[in-house]
Image 1: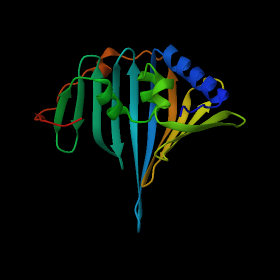
Image 2: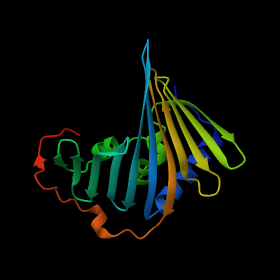
Image 3: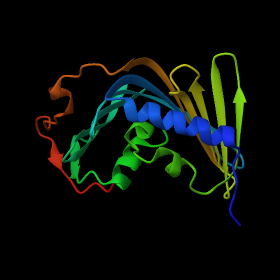
Image 4: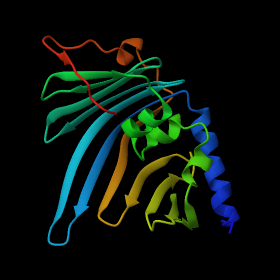
Length: 205
């Protein structure tokens, strides 16, 4: 049976998709909160990442946790690099859509880089709602697996400033700060030079 979603949800998803399509570059700070929900204990981890992106497929994600650098993703449109600070190891990959999605997750960066955003977001969705607040819109998408996707969208720019996934045993939230739209980003931002002594390894991504 085909699921018919509210027309206002479809309309605002299209506006968000258009806003993403019109962006040429973006820079911001991502604040991630991951919560694992066990039967006896709930564990929360927080991390921060500096994000740079320029179309068609240049991006840099420099992540840290508790003030220490953890992971670095760099994509130069031809190759995707993953560097692990703790072990001083790195991997090199073809930037397929699947790998880019794994690297970027459910985030503003992922939305900007997804050409068919509305279609991708609605995969598996069985119900949706739109709630209007004074300065933002809240889009809530429910999947057949009972996962909930929440997108907090600025009313003026139609860009998400917060996203959240609620699953059975975990939740993941991204909050955006220091957002710059269409900044001029130095080309060197999207180059990766292995640090001294770094070892190339067979990471999976």
